[in-house]
Length: 188
View (spheres, one colour):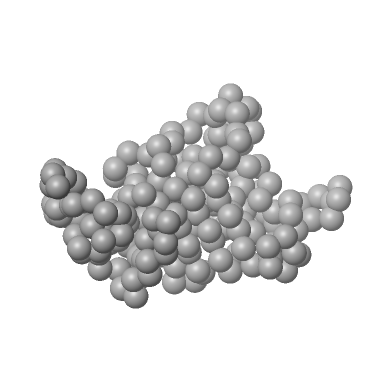
């Protein structure tokens, strides 16, 4: 699939960092609409279907009221939502996200994970994150990678799972959303 026309129609990848100049004068709606370019023939204008897809994508990430705001004036969390909308405007079957909550504050991180969980009812969402303690509350299945792939059929991550995968001791501290804290390493 990778690199094929069929693959482009099925899969949308949102990298951790997308090259956008913060001072660039593009409006959010225009940036989301650009997500449709892969479906256009060379030098074709956006049609009504493209515009509806961009509008719907902005609605789905709760950013439609800001559609005429400049991208360069967005907060980190708002920018993540707009980039997510751009990916969604392609109507993917699979959404692959690399660190979608990088550089956002904790409340925004929680909101983004909730949003992705809601989206997962309609499309497959695969995400890469180092923040497994928080995200585990919002996913169905988890695979941990540390030189080997460790697949877990459920979203439950125990201290033993973390210790076995990453070979370091942890303790679980929960206050609404669970977080993992490393214990001191035992001397051998």
